[in-house]
Image 1 (cartoon, rainbow, N blue to C red):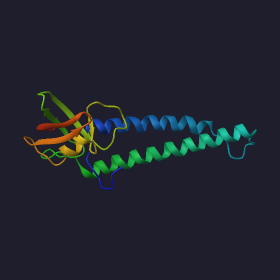
Image 2 (cartoon, one colour; image 1 turned 180 degrees about the horizontal axis):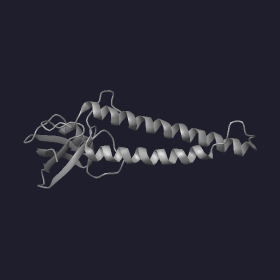
Image 3 (spheres, rainbow, N blue to C red; image 1 turned 45 degrees about the vertical axis):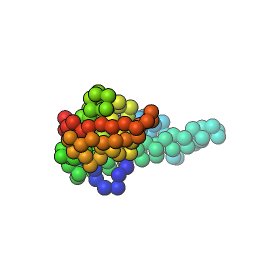
Image 4 (spheres, rainbow, N blue to C red; image 1 turned 30 degrees about the vertical axis):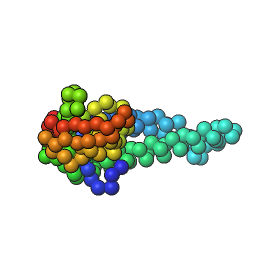
Length: 154
């Protein structure tokens, strides 16, 4: 996650909140399967299962903590910028072939969302810092591309 607080779009916030809720539900399920530490452990397979569940619990706790920290950082950063493209911005772009698409600039693609463009992707990097009316060039997987920033915001 980013070291400085960064804005987040409403759609990304909702996706993170849903993921955190799902993880909390999964965590409660895993935690309920852990044995009391004073209880007798059966054979080695039981002990291995118990260790795996404990690892799962740590992994879930880590991800819940990451999401909670990211959401808190977004609260500190405030809303996404509307004058220049930044992380959290919703941007409408018109590509060289005339097609227009509205995308959101995000940190990472944790959830498959065709409207999300990560800030470290070729298009995302090209768009960052630009304003409506600017033309950006980027290197797409199938060759060079260009796009015009039509508008920022919803």
